[in-house]
Amino acid sequence: MTLFHLYIPVRAFLKSYRHGAVSKTVLGLRVWDLRNISPCSSIAKPSSMEAILRKTVVPLPTYEMRDKSPPPPESNSLELMHFYKCLEKEQRLEFLEKLSHDFGVDHKGVSDLAGKLLDFQVRDPATILQVEDRLRYSLTPRYRHLLTHISKVQGGVKFLVDLRADLIEFATSKISDSPHMRDLNGTLKSLLSEWFSVGLLRLERITWQSPCEILQKISQYEAVHPVRNWTDLKRRVGPYRRCYAFTHASMPGEPLVVLHVALTEDIANNIQSIVREFATLDADEDVNKINAAIFYSISSTQAGLQGVELGNYLIKRVVLELQSEFPHMAQFSSLSPIPGFAVWLHGALAQHKKEGRATELLSEQEWMQVEDVTGAAPGAPAVEALRRLISTSEWIRSERLIRALEPVLMRLCAWYLYGEKRRGYALNPVANFHLQNGATMWRLNWQADTSPRGIANSCGIMVNYRYFLQETSANSAVYLQNKVIKSSEQVMGLVSQFQKNSKL
Image 1 (cartoon, rainbow, N blue to C red):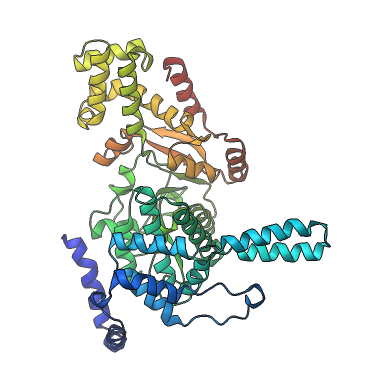
Image 2 (spheres, rainbow, N blue to C red):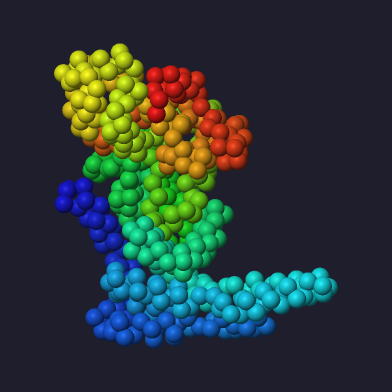
């Protein structure tokens, strides 16, 4: 454990010590809560799983009683939450499979109503609409009411977010991919999308004066450029920097998605100038030196909110905040990593080697340079030498290798971002995110991230996605509807070079 990780908890302790009366009250509540909740060891998990589901998942009220049935007691929801938290991973899977399979839709009732609807097509519109409404109600899974009731108790929304994270993990790891589990996941995602709609979110600016717990979570959740120590964190929320997060009233103290912004004179072309080089911690910001906002890190913190749109709304809200603070600011851009490029490139090299098409990936002159620098023989040996070079960070230490590889890697990276697609949209997830928001693929930057992670993931290349505010709506529409990527002359020039020199 580093001094940085000790610092924030100690600071939190000292802060709470100054509020002793409050601490005692909270402590008293915690003791009371613990006395009234059975320890996990007392739960007979396998034998009581069916019983607790039968108790907490109440039957679907009849159509006539749908708005008049009293809600179940909160203790039912709290009991289920405590029960689930005490289960091991395998038991959680069994629990969710039982919940999704045994407490879903009444398929026989749905079939009967569907038949009635067909028979009633000759009746008057009011009768048809009522039968349709009954059918719609009958399609509600029983467990949906349970999820709704859980959301209303303290800690319930956070519990459901974590429960969906389990569902996603089970599906991703192929442990369970049953249609009932997929339906449960879809139902929960739909509910979370309603509960976390943008109108219910609160935008918070994180500063060094923010609560210690929030600062600690901002540090822990940073997924793009890890925070090294407390000084690093202090600088990232200090002068010429902004940090914003969306929070929700049902999850106090939990940032949902975090955006880090650098305030610069020009659009940055490397991450070192942002996370490694800083003004002094107590410098006064010079407004005349702030012309651009660089979104250099955005991190979702809750795995269970995957697929719930938050990040795009956060960027739009932050743009409005910055325009209010700096009315003259007109340049908004990301400085984004390119995860997946190195993996894609390794695959392309391996495929060319296997198929004996080495000359198609690079130009003849470029292959000669690779052979000269590595000492490899032409053909397959040169391809293997290039693949080995890229799989390590050693090449970044040689100026000669850097010069030889720059045109090759920049061209291939441009094609990866622009030309490699999944269902017609950009294969790269970061590119797809910004393009959906209406950004322009504006500039590729060589040696923009020379950290070990940057070299391993994207050969050190980063990309600016530029937000031209008057064009974002049109760009987003044309990308989503027609799968057209708006790109700058620099990017299209590199793509044209790829198409001329390569035959992937």
